Image (cartoon, rainbow, N blue to C red; front, side):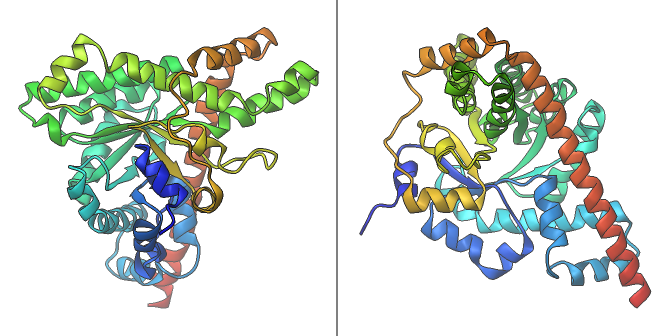
Length: 372
């Protein structure tokens, strides 16, 4: 048998998660096939993914009609549809979760993105989602806004596993790890079994290159052109350095002794936006034991087809990565400005997708009520 690139990636300690979920994937068996053939061991979702799933085809028509007949509100309908898909995906991945002691086999569902700046609202929604999905292998996804940090801590303190999303900056990533460790310390005080609490920190990659490349193009110099396509990988590699640093402290050793598991770095936004770059760039250049790479299906297929996996491509790269970011600053490309903009834009995109979803489902509910 030929060893596939996705198997090699898995052998290198990288967990492959699919950045997509839909009723069609679940009912057609395509998701099960990806588990069996392409080493997929988890799933992430976001508001854009749910909007695409629910508004494509007719897979949700019967459920929407049923909920309309029951008099469900718009918010209740979306909550029911999304949590049902996630619960069913959790069931599909239950054997993976059991085999990995809960490390993999995870399915993420995000709090309403309109709550990203509302700490109390995020905490309440996280508990509500967790209670409704009611599966051990669910991750509740919380954006890494300043307001989200306290919500991350409070949610973990309740014994709920969390996927922290929309991380762009190294400084914010440090704050996320601190929020995670605060949460575990409180969970321990609250009597929770720390070995059952899992977390990933979703560090976005390709969007960094998209924004920085735009600024480099505007500069137009040969020096600027030479730095194109390098910032995303450099930033993520330095994030892994932060991970190694903050999970080798005395503080972490105390938690680990109590059964805690580290919050794994997760590479998100790993689809290449610029066709000039290799389509597996954010996979093969960010391999290391203990990381997760959540891929759109196109990136997964490219990796499976022709990804060149050479083992660990992160360790030993930190000096070069620092040089890349320093060179960008030297050209006047402000790291702090870029990451602040990307966080703001990322949240705006998710809120926009959620509002579009609300509008589309509202129309479908109205049509179903009219038809009945």
